[in-house]
Image (cartoon, rainbow, N blue to C red; front, top):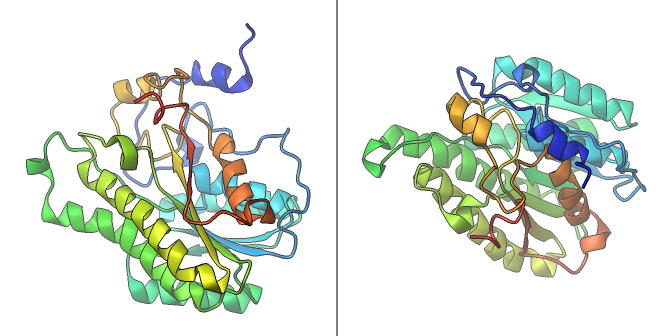
Length: 293
């Protein structure tokens, strides 16, 4: 059986590391696939404005590009100076596909920053229809005894508190038909002995998604999530050693890591009216990892 492009690129990934999080896409070899040329937009998000956190690279970039192909204007938020080039590239891609684009460098772990970000997006774009809470951090440790209180706080502040703050603030600017999409993880369901605090944040996101969906149902604002499996993003070489990076995804039923572009259609589906009767749900894009566990 002939191998597809995703299988072929997976075989080309050597062991590699990056010195610090959140990681830089431009330093990854081979580069992640963030734009599938076979994905053709159909104006499913025409007239919509979306905010994607962690939108400079990885899954966030793929989502931003797919949204632009579907007619949306897209704001992206990112954390660090070293991500500037990645963010510029994402803005360029959004504009290439006809969308208005703007980048915001900001630390979403602080509530006042989240307030500032939402206000700035409203000022620059005039509205906010789709919030994609995608930013995240992870710090592997061999034992719970190795997880410091500072690490626990940082992981929850970025992965969950920021998501909570942004959702709370964004809802006041949303109307019927708008939506929130949260990035959960396979670790919320399978657990991870080396990512205990990270897995806990993703479990919290899953429960938060269900509860907020019920809370906002009468307002017609839908809340759903995507739970990616092992995806080739900058967070991987910025988190794990070279051996683990080389083996990343090999233990899934599909025997490979996924690409950001393979996640993006799930976000488009949840952002569009194609999913108008869905709320409180999670779509698993994980190479069969959850089913095979």
